[in-house]
Image (cartoon, each protein chain N blue to C red):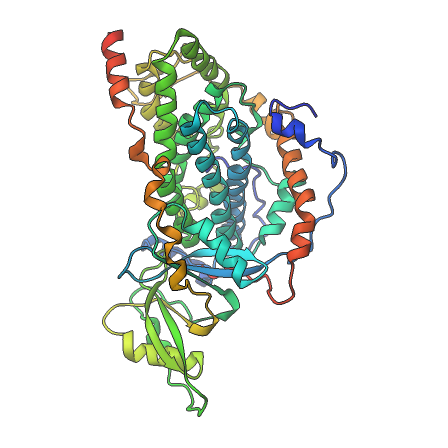
Length: 202
Length: 327
């Protein structure tokens, strides 16, 4: 294979013609949900997922995939299996109407992060933190604490200590974002050049 | 950047019988303007078509990064290199977002990547053409991106929540791509006679693939009508092509370039563009593998897959597990 691309020529493709065995359907890394806080004082919002071999690498990949472009003050990731989800409702039915009081337990309480879907098609937003001994109880507590006037279509409860948070020392990860003007549309002003060209050519 | 209005391969739907009650509730939700979320019941055809469409879009981002990526080392000057690296990185990031959206419908990312490298899945046909000069890279950055944005803005109004969320983020990130591309072209257009000639030749080379980009005129079948009703397909291929011509032909002509189609003219009566039909036989031939770069594009992906295998194997751990993304 001769390419116009000098890099491809340097690759010296040694796999040409070899068949690649397809992977088993689930032969791939785990799934981690990514949450970003765009500005101080704003709630965290769900941004998407990354696939990674562990929580720490998930954090690194999430930083690159979700926070390299727009302002960010904090980021966290959690294994998708650690997110406890409610059913999803529609129309004007709030999902909290379906969440009933769990059986009382004597287990130790721990904190849970509660996320709300306020509109179908939008991102889940952080509503607050509750103390509970089970995810079911966390949702019921959230219903009493946050399930007020708005219609909420879906709730997530995530045990706080399952989350890979951003440490205070890592907060400076995003300090240099505003300097990267080459990723900013306003840095590409061709108007004057175009205008003088048009004047010359008319 | 490369959401194709054109999704290849039809789906056989005759055998798909859906529960009429569930179907009615599903359609009512779409009529109310509510988005569909992954846990909702959805017709088989809706799921299949969305997987196909989002997967092809994701592959197009990955493959689309190749002809531009070629020019990173040879981009004129440090600023252009920085910008082009950032842009190519964005495109690969967009593929990740799109793969995730398709995964919520039940196909794993690795299965999609397998289908790309074995040639089972398609990607936007335009990337089977080579970028000979810097001007070709500029044409892609400005005009191919522009075409993609026309498609993506339309698709962002579709009915599937995860795809809409991915597209919203993609469109926001692309705002600089288009400006960067136009900036590059303005510099060529206002430069030396040789620079102008370079870009003119790029237009001449890319015009046919650009017209192909939006896909052949839709045959309005019941299939298409259903997909439009379900807000999977948001605009006809001819509509997006017209919208692109409306927005960008004046900008190309303003720079003093010509477009290699004598018939290209806006028809004052219909308000639509008249043009010579691009060679659709060539389009089909290239889609089916016989284009100038098909082989190289897939080969580069295969090399990446093969050479990355040991890294993936070394990192794999039994402590995590693949599960379908939540949203």
